[in-house]
Image 1: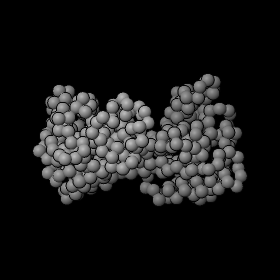
Image 2: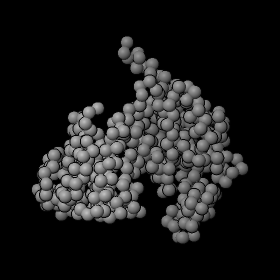
Image 3: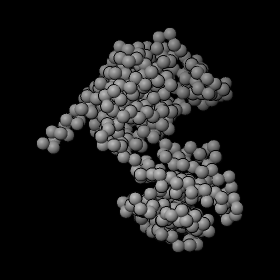
Length: 426
Protein backbone atom coordinates (compact mmCIF):
# COMPACT_ATOMS: atom_id res chain seq x y z
CA UNK A 1 0.00 0.00 0.00
CA UNK A 2 3.01 2.31 0.02
CA UNK A 3 3.93 4.72 2.77
CA UNK A 4 1.19 5.13 5.37
CA UNK A 5 -0.17 8.50 6.53
CA UNK A 6 -1.04 9.13 10.17
CA UNK A 7 -3.15 12.11 11.18
CA UNK A 8 -2.11 13.90 14.37
CA UNK A 9 -4.64 16.02 16.26
CA UNK A 10 -2.76 18.53 18.41
CA UNK A 11 -3.36 21.82 20.20
CA UNK A 12 -0.39 23.76 18.88
CA UNK A 13 -1.15 26.80 21.01
CA UNK A 14 0.09 24.94 24.09
CA UNK A 15 1.61 21.58 23.03
CA UNK A 16 3.96 22.39 20.15
CA UNK A 17 7.12 20.80 21.55
CA UNK A 18 5.26 17.63 22.48
CA UNK A 19 3.61 17.51 19.05
CA UNK A 20 6.93 17.93 17.29
CA UNK A 21 8.43 15.09 19.34
CA UNK A 22 5.52 12.75 18.56
CA UNK A 23 5.70 13.71 14.89
CA UNK A 24 9.41 12.91 14.78
CA UNK A 25 8.85 9.56 16.52
CA UNK A 26 6.16 8.54 14.03
CA UNK A 27 8.17 9.60 11.00
CA UNK A 28 11.20 7.68 12.26
CA UNK A 29 9.00 4.57 12.06
CA UNK A 30 8.55 5.25 8.34
CA UNK A 31 5.11 6.86 8.15
CA UNK A 32 4.06 10.28 6.92
CA UNK A 33 2.21 12.57 9.31
CA UNK A 34 -0.56 15.07 8.69
CA UNK A 35 -0.60 17.52 11.60
CA UNK A 36 -3.95 19.20 12.30
CA UNK A 37 -4.05 22.08 14.78
CA UNK A 38 -7.22 21.94 16.89
CA UNK A 39 -6.05 24.52 19.42
CA UNK A 40 -8.10 27.69 19.70
CA UNK A 41 -6.72 29.46 22.77
CA UNK A 42 -3.67 31.29 21.41
CA UNK A 43 -1.76 31.51 18.12
CA UNK A 44 0.10 28.32 17.19
CA UNK A 45 3.69 27.85 18.29
CA UNK A 46 4.59 25.81 15.20
CA UNK A 47 3.28 25.30 11.68
CA UNK A 48 0.68 22.63 10.96
CA UNK A 49 -0.24 20.86 7.74
CA UNK A 50 -3.80 21.99 8.44
CA UNK A 51 -3.91 25.11 10.60
CA UNK A 52 -6.46 26.07 13.23
CA UNK A 53 -7.58 28.82 10.84
CA UNK A 54 -8.32 26.21 8.15
CA UNK A 55 -10.15 24.05 10.69
CA UNK A 56 -12.31 26.98 11.79
CA UNK A 57 -13.07 27.90 8.17
CA UNK A 58 -14.16 24.32 7.44
CA UNK A 59 -16.68 24.74 10.28
CA UNK A 60 -18.11 27.87 8.68
CA UNK A 61 -16.42 30.22 11.13
CA UNK A 62 -13.01 31.85 11.60
CA UNK A 63 -10.39 31.34 14.27
CA UNK A 64 -10.49 34.91 15.56
CA UNK A 65 -14.24 34.64 16.22
CA UNK A 66 -13.77 31.30 17.94
CA UNK A 67 -10.97 32.67 20.14
CA UNK A 68 -13.22 35.55 21.23
CA UNK A 69 -15.99 33.21 22.38
CA UNK A 70 -16.61 33.41 26.14
CA UNK A 71 -17.49 29.77 26.62
CA UNK A 72 -15.39 26.82 25.47
CA UNK A 73 -18.35 24.60 24.58
CA UNK A 74 -19.32 26.40 21.36
CA UNK A 75 -15.68 26.89 20.42
CA UNK A 76 -14.81 23.21 20.83
CA UNK A 77 -17.98 22.20 18.94
CA UNK A 78 -16.92 24.33 15.97
CA UNK A 79 -13.34 23.05 16.02
CA UNK A 80 -14.65 19.49 16.20
CA UNK A 81 -16.92 20.11 13.20
CA UNK A 82 -14.11 21.68 11.17
CA UNK A 83 -11.60 18.94 12.00
CA UNK A 84 -14.08 16.22 11.01
CA UNK A 85 -14.59 17.93 7.65
CA UNK A 86 -10.84 18.17 7.06
CA UNK A 87 -10.23 14.53 8.04
CA UNK A 88 -12.93 13.21 5.72
CA UNK A 89 -11.24 15.14 2.91
CA UNK A 90 -8.01 13.36 3.87
CA UNK A 91 -9.82 10.00 3.83
CA UNK A 92 -10.96 10.66 0.25
CA UNK A 93 -7.38 11.58 -0.66
CA UNK A 94 -6.09 8.32 0.94
CA UNK A 95 -4.10 10.38 3.45
CA UNK A 96 -5.59 9.07 6.70
CA UNK A 97 -4.56 5.51 7.51
CA UNK A 98 -4.76 6.14 11.24
CA UNK A 99 -5.18 8.92 13.78
CA UNK A 100 -3.52 9.82 17.09
CA UNK A 101 -3.90 12.53 19.72
CA UNK A 102 -2.71 13.25 23.25
CA UNK A 103 -3.79 15.42 26.16
CA UNK A 104 -5.87 15.82 29.29
CA UNK A 105 -9.63 15.87 29.77
CA UNK A 106 -10.39 18.76 27.39
CA UNK A 107 -8.23 17.58 24.51
CA UNK A 108 -9.28 13.96 25.05
CA UNK A 109 -12.95 14.97 24.82
CA UNK A 110 -12.39 17.03 21.67
CA UNK A 111 -10.11 14.50 19.96
CA UNK A 112 -12.19 11.41 20.70
CA UNK A 113 -15.32 13.25 19.52
CA UNK A 114 -13.55 13.63 16.19
CA UNK A 115 -12.29 10.03 16.17
CA UNK A 116 -15.80 8.65 16.80
CA UNK A 117 -16.94 9.83 13.37
CA UNK A 118 -14.31 7.83 11.46
CA UNK A 119 -15.17 4.44 9.94
CA UNK A 120 -14.73 1.25 11.93
CA UNK A 121 -11.30 -0.20 11.15
CA UNK A 122 -9.34 3.05 10.88
CA UNK A 123 -6.85 2.81 13.81
CA UNK A 124 -7.53 5.45 16.45
CA UNK A 125 -5.25 6.04 19.46
CA UNK A 126 -5.72 8.55 22.29
CA UNK A 127 -2.89 9.08 24.78
CA UNK A 128 -4.75 10.54 27.75
CA UNK A 129 -3.92 11.56 31.29
CA UNK A 130 -7.68 11.55 31.93
CA UNK A 131 -8.28 7.99 30.74
CA UNK A 132 -8.95 6.64 34.23
CA UNK A 133 -11.35 9.37 35.38
CA UNK A 134 -14.47 7.40 36.45
CA UNK A 135 -16.95 10.02 35.25
CA UNK A 136 -15.41 10.35 31.78
CA UNK A 137 -13.55 7.21 30.74
CA UNK A 138 -16.41 5.38 29.03
CA UNK A 139 -17.55 8.61 27.38
CA UNK A 140 -14.19 8.99 25.63
CA UNK A 141 -14.49 5.84 23.53
CA UNK A 142 -18.11 4.78 24.04
CA UNK A 143 -19.10 2.27 21.38
CA UNK A 144 -16.31 3.12 18.93
CA UNK A 145 -13.06 1.29 18.16
CA UNK A 146 -10.85 3.87 19.88
CA UNK A 147 -7.78 2.64 21.75
CA UNK A 148 -6.93 4.59 24.92
CA UNK A 149 -3.38 4.71 26.30
CA UNK A 150 -3.44 5.81 29.93
CA UNK A 151 -0.74 8.41 30.55
CA UNK A 152 -0.13 8.51 34.29
CA UNK A 153 1.41 11.98 33.99
CA UNK A 154 0.15 15.08 32.21
CA UNK A 155 1.67 15.28 28.71
CA UNK A 156 2.98 18.78 29.35
CA UNK A 157 6.58 19.56 28.52
CA UNK A 158 9.22 17.07 27.49
CA UNK A 159 10.85 14.93 30.16
CA UNK A 160 11.80 11.28 30.50
CA UNK A 161 8.25 10.23 31.35
CA UNK A 162 6.38 12.22 28.70
CA UNK A 163 8.91 11.18 26.05
CA UNK A 164 8.33 7.53 27.02
CA UNK A 165 4.56 7.85 26.56
CA UNK A 166 4.91 9.66 23.24
CA UNK A 167 7.47 7.13 21.96
CA UNK A 168 5.19 4.21 22.83
CA UNK A 169 2.21 6.00 21.36
CA UNK A 170 4.09 6.50 18.10
CA UNK A 171 5.03 2.83 18.01
CA UNK A 172 1.48 1.76 18.84
CA UNK A 173 -0.24 3.81 16.14
CA UNK A 174 2.35 2.86 13.56
CA UNK A 175 1.97 -0.82 14.42
CA UNK A 176 -1.82 -0.64 14.21
CA UNK A 177 -1.67 1.17 10.87
CA UNK A 178 0.87 -1.30 9.49
CA UNK A 179 -1.48 -4.17 10.36
CA UNK A 180 -4.64 -2.46 9.13
CA UNK A 181 -6.36 -2.72 5.76
CA UNK A 182 -8.35 0.44 6.45
CA UNK A 183 -12.11 0.67 6.98
CA UNK A 184 -13.68 -2.75 7.48
CA UNK A 185 -15.65 -3.96 4.51
CA UNK A 186 -17.42 -7.27 4.80
CA UNK A 187 -16.71 -9.79 2.07
CA UNK A 188 -19.18 -9.47 -0.79
CA UNK A 189 -19.35 -13.27 -0.88
CA UNK A 190 -20.86 -13.40 2.62
CA UNK A 191 -24.24 -12.36 3.94
CA UNK A 192 -23.63 -10.91 7.38
CA UNK A 193 -26.27 -10.73 10.12
CA UNK A 194 -26.04 -8.86 13.43
CA UNK A 195 -27.47 -10.67 16.48
CA UNK A 196 -27.98 -9.13 19.93
CA UNK A 197 -27.56 -11.33 22.96
CA UNK A 198 -27.20 -11.48 26.72
CA UNK A 199 -27.01 -14.17 29.38
CA UNK A 200 -30.74 -14.63 29.88
CA UNK A 201 -31.31 -15.17 26.14
CA UNK A 202 -28.19 -17.23 25.52
CA UNK A 203 -29.97 -20.39 24.42
CA UNK A 204 -31.93 -18.53 21.76
CA UNK A 205 -28.94 -16.54 20.53
CA UNK A 206 -26.72 -19.59 20.19
CA UNK A 207 -29.45 -21.45 18.28
CA UNK A 208 -30.00 -18.43 16.01
CA UNK A 209 -26.29 -18.21 15.21
CA UNK A 210 -26.03 -21.95 14.49
CA UNK A 211 -29.03 -21.82 12.15
CA UNK A 212 -27.76 -18.69 10.38
CA UNK A 213 -24.39 -20.31 9.79
CA UNK A 214 -26.06 -23.52 8.56
CA UNK A 215 -27.81 -21.41 5.93
CA UNK A 216 -24.59 -19.75 4.80
CA UNK A 217 -24.76 -16.50 6.76
CA UNK A 218 -22.02 -14.98 8.92
CA UNK A 219 -23.47 -14.18 12.35
CA UNK A 220 -21.89 -11.41 14.42
CA UNK A 221 -23.10 -11.15 18.04
CA UNK A 222 -23.36 -7.94 20.07
CA UNK A 223 -23.64 -8.01 23.85
CA UNK A 224 -26.86 -6.19 24.78
CA UNK A 225 -25.48 -4.22 27.70
CA UNK A 226 -26.06 -0.79 26.15
CA UNK A 227 -22.61 -0.09 24.76
CA UNK A 228 -22.65 -3.22 22.59
CA UNK A 229 -26.00 -2.23 21.12
CA UNK A 230 -24.70 1.25 20.37
CA UNK A 231 -21.74 -0.31 18.57
CA UNK A 232 -24.14 -2.35 16.45
CA UNK A 233 -26.14 0.77 15.57
CA UNK A 234 -22.91 2.47 14.47
CA UNK A 235 -21.93 -0.44 12.24
CA UNK A 236 -25.41 -0.68 10.74
CA UNK A 237 -24.98 2.91 9.59
CA UNK A 238 -21.68 1.90 7.99
CA UNK A 239 -23.55 -0.65 5.84
CA UNK A 240 -21.73 -3.76 7.05
CA UNK A 241 -24.79 -6.00 7.53
CA UNK A 242 -27.45 -7.63 5.38
CA UNK A 243 -29.89 -8.13 8.25
CA UNK A 244 -30.47 -7.95 12.00
CA UNK A 245 -31.99 -10.42 14.44
CA UNK A 246 -32.49 -8.21 17.47
CA UNK A 247 -33.16 -10.87 20.08
CA UNK A 248 -32.44 -8.47 22.96
CA UNK A 249 -33.44 -4.90 22.02
CA UNK A 250 -33.65 -4.00 25.70
CA UNK A 251 -31.21 -1.11 25.49
CA UNK A 252 -34.30 0.75 24.33
CA UNK A 253 -36.41 -0.15 27.36
CA UNK A 254 -33.52 0.38 29.77
CA UNK A 255 -33.01 3.87 28.33
CA UNK A 256 -36.73 4.53 28.58
CA UNK A 257 -37.10 3.31 32.17
CA UNK A 258 -33.68 4.21 33.61
CA UNK A 259 -31.95 0.81 33.82
CA UNK A 260 -28.23 0.04 33.95
CA UNK A 261 -28.04 -1.27 30.38
CA UNK A 262 -29.43 1.82 28.68
CA UNK A 263 -28.48 2.34 25.05
CA UNK A 264 -28.60 5.74 23.40
CA UNK A 265 -31.95 7.36 22.48
CA UNK A 266 -31.79 6.32 18.80
CA UNK A 267 -31.67 2.60 19.64
CA UNK A 268 -33.73 0.52 17.17
CA UNK A 269 -33.35 3.10 14.41
CA UNK A 270 -30.07 2.09 12.72
CA UNK A 271 -31.35 -0.78 10.59
CA UNK A 272 -34.38 1.20 9.47
CA UNK A 273 -32.29 4.19 8.43
CA UNK A 274 -29.81 1.98 6.58
CA UNK A 275 -32.52 0.06 4.71
CA UNK A 276 -31.59 -3.26 6.35
CA UNK A 277 -34.22 -5.95 7.14
CA UNK A 278 -34.71 -6.56 10.86
CA UNK A 279 -36.50 -8.99 13.14
CA UNK A 280 -37.24 -7.78 16.66
CA UNK A 281 -37.85 -10.13 19.60
CA UNK A 282 -38.83 -9.05 23.12
CA UNK A 283 -36.08 -10.40 25.36
CA UNK A 284 -35.08 -7.98 28.09
CA UNK A 285 -38.33 -6.04 27.95
CA UNK A 286 -39.39 -8.24 30.88
CA UNK A 287 -36.87 -6.70 33.29
CA UNK A 288 -35.11 -3.56 34.50
CA UNK A 289 -31.43 -3.94 35.36
CA UNK A 290 -31.08 -2.11 38.67
CA UNK A 291 -28.10 -3.57 40.59
CA UNK A 292 -26.11 -3.71 42.72
CA UNK A 293 -28.47 -4.84 45.45
CA UNK A 294 -27.13 -2.21 47.86
CA UNK A 295 -29.10 0.40 45.91
CA UNK A 296 -32.30 -1.08 47.31
CA UNK A 297 -31.46 0.12 50.83
CA UNK A 298 -29.62 3.31 49.89
CA UNK A 299 -32.52 5.62 49.00
CA UNK A 300 -31.68 5.09 45.31
CA UNK A 301 -33.66 7.29 42.91
CA UNK A 302 -34.58 4.51 40.45
CA UNK A 303 -35.62 2.08 43.17
CA UNK A 304 -37.77 4.77 44.79
CA UNK A 305 -39.30 6.14 41.60
CA UNK A 306 -40.40 2.73 40.32
CA UNK A 307 -41.00 1.06 43.72
CA UNK A 308 -38.67 -1.77 42.69
CA UNK A 309 -38.36 -3.23 46.19
CA UNK A 310 -42.04 -4.20 46.12
CA UNK A 311 -41.77 -6.01 42.77
CA UNK A 312 -40.65 -9.43 41.66
CA UNK A 313 -36.89 -9.32 41.25
CA UNK A 314 -34.04 -11.75 40.76
CA UNK A 315 -30.44 -11.40 41.99
CA UNK A 316 -28.06 -13.41 39.74
CA UNK A 317 -25.14 -11.92 41.72
CA UNK A 318 -24.54 -8.91 43.97
CA UNK A 319 -23.88 -6.62 41.02
CA UNK A 320 -26.81 -7.70 38.87
CA UNK A 321 -30.40 -7.29 39.97
CA UNK A 322 -33.26 -7.71 37.50
CA UNK A 323 -36.65 -6.29 38.52
CA UNK A 324 -39.82 -7.26 36.70
CA UNK A 325 -41.41 -4.68 34.39
CA UNK A 326 -45.07 -3.86 34.98
CA UNK A 327 -47.90 -4.03 32.44
CA UNK A 328 -47.94 -0.22 32.26
CA UNK A 329 -44.20 -0.17 31.49
CA UNK A 330 -44.67 -2.90 28.88
CA UNK A 331 -47.26 -0.69 27.16
CA UNK A 332 -44.82 2.23 27.23
CA UNK A 333 -42.08 0.04 25.72
CA UNK A 334 -44.42 -1.30 23.01
CA UNK A 335 -45.45 2.19 21.96
CA UNK A 336 -41.80 3.25 21.74
CA UNK A 337 -40.94 0.17 19.63
CA UNK A 338 -43.80 1.03 17.27
CA UNK A 339 -42.60 4.62 16.94
CA UNK A 340 -39.10 3.43 16.02
CA UNK A 341 -40.16 0.74 13.55
CA UNK A 342 -42.66 3.01 11.80
CA UNK A 343 -39.67 5.05 10.58
CA UNK A 344 -37.95 2.05 8.96
CA UNK A 345 -37.18 2.14 5.24
CA UNK A 346 -36.77 -1.65 4.98
CA UNK A 347 -38.86 -4.67 6.04
CA UNK A 348 -39.26 -5.21 9.77
CA UNK A 349 -41.18 -7.69 11.90
CA UNK A 350 -41.75 -8.34 15.60
CA UNK A 351 -41.82 -11.87 17.00
CA UNK A 352 -43.04 -12.62 20.52
CA UNK A 353 -42.39 -15.90 22.43
CA UNK A 354 -45.64 -16.33 24.35
CA UNK A 355 -44.23 -18.74 26.96
CA UNK A 356 -41.52 -16.42 28.24
CA UNK A 357 -39.20 -13.68 27.04
CA UNK A 358 -36.03 -14.82 28.85
CA UNK A 359 -34.74 -17.55 31.14
CA UNK A 360 -35.90 -15.40 34.09
CA UNK A 361 -39.54 -15.03 33.02
CA UNK A 362 -40.65 -18.52 31.99
CA UNK A 363 -42.98 -20.52 34.23
CA UNK A 364 -41.69 -21.22 37.77
CA UNK A 365 -38.99 -18.53 37.57
CA UNK A 366 -38.62 -15.25 39.46
CA UNK A 367 -39.91 -12.86 36.79
CA UNK A 368 -42.77 -15.00 35.44
CA UNK A 369 -45.67 -12.63 34.78
CA UNK A 370 -47.71 -13.57 31.70
CA UNK A 371 -50.31 -10.88 32.49
CA UNK A 372 -47.68 -8.14 32.09
CA UNK A 373 -46.30 -9.76 28.94
CA UNK A 374 -49.80 -9.90 27.45
CA UNK A 375 -50.00 -6.09 27.41
CA UNK A 376 -47.28 -5.85 24.77
CA UNK A 377 -48.90 -7.03 21.55
CA UNK A 378 -52.17 -5.02 21.78
CA UNK A 379 -50.25 -1.85 22.66
CA UNK A 380 -47.77 -2.46 19.84
CA UNK A 381 -50.44 -3.11 17.21
CA UNK A 382 -52.38 -0.01 18.24
CA UNK A 383 -49.46 2.19 17.18
CA UNK A 384 -47.61 0.08 14.60
CA UNK A 385 -47.81 0.47 10.84
CA UNK A 386 -50.11 -2.43 9.84
CA UNK A 387 -47.63 -3.48 7.13
CA UNK A 388 -45.18 -4.51 9.86
CA UNK A 389 -45.98 -8.07 10.86
CA UNK A 390 -46.34 -9.10 14.51
CA UNK A 391 -46.17 -12.84 15.17
CA UNK A 392 -46.83 -14.59 18.47
CA UNK A 393 -45.21 -18.02 18.80
CA UNK A 394 -46.26 -20.62 21.34
CA UNK A 395 -42.75 -21.22 22.64
CA UNK A 396 -40.19 -19.99 25.15
CA UNK A 397 -37.58 -17.57 23.89
CA UNK A 398 -34.72 -20.00 24.59
CA UNK A 399 -36.10 -22.74 22.37
CA UNK A 400 -35.03 -24.09 19.00
CA UNK A 401 -38.56 -23.48 17.76
CA UNK A 402 -38.45 -19.76 18.43
CA UNK A 403 -34.84 -19.36 17.25
CA UNK A 404 -35.58 -21.07 13.94
CA UNK A 405 -38.68 -18.93 13.46
CA UNK A 406 -36.52 -15.81 13.81
CA UNK A 407 -34.06 -17.05 11.21
CA UNK A 408 -36.82 -18.18 8.84
CA UNK A 409 -38.40 -14.73 8.96
CA UNK A 410 -35.16 -12.83 8.34
CA UNK A 411 -34.06 -15.22 5.59
CA UNK A 412 -37.36 -14.64 3.76
CA UNK A 413 -36.87 -10.87 3.98
CA UNK A 414 -33.30 -11.00 2.69
CA UNK A 415 -34.24 -13.34 -0.16
CA UNK A 416 -37.12 -11.07 -1.16
CA UNK A 417 -34.84 -8.03 -1.13
CA UNK A 418 -32.24 -9.87 -3.25
CA UNK A 419 -34.89 -11.01 -5.76
CA UNK A 420 -36.31 -7.50 -6.03
CA UNK A 421 -32.86 -6.10 -6.77
CA UNK A 422 -32.38 -8.73 -9.49
CA UNK A 423 -35.73 -7.80 -11.07
CA UNK A 424 -34.81 -4.11 -11.04
CA UNK A 425 -31.63 -4.84 -12.99
CA UNK A 426 -33.49 -6.73 -15.74
